[in-house]
Length: 138
Image (cartoon, rainbow, N blue to C red):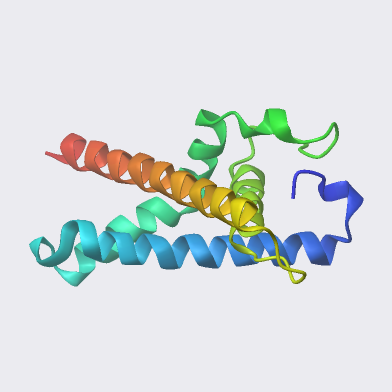
């Protein structure tokens, strides 16, 4: 995912799509666990959407300065929310996509820890952005 120009576009899009779906599913689950019965279903959906949405994923991409990890020419415009969100989703997709040939326990654990840490940050930033929006509405 860090070298999008070195793989067929359909492969890169597949891993980005896997990452995006996985982020959305995980944010929905976390929203339910964190907020639980304190919010109505609409509130849970709003929190989940805030966390998994393009704007938040792009913000996380910029906060973590992930563009530095991409090869030259791999990212055309760091100000493009859609491109940044897709790149972050591809990175997450790589983390959650178990290699077909298997891997050592140490690599599997490292990949899982990295995926959880990234998801924690995505959820943290998304929920913070939503809270800020709610405060400014008052």
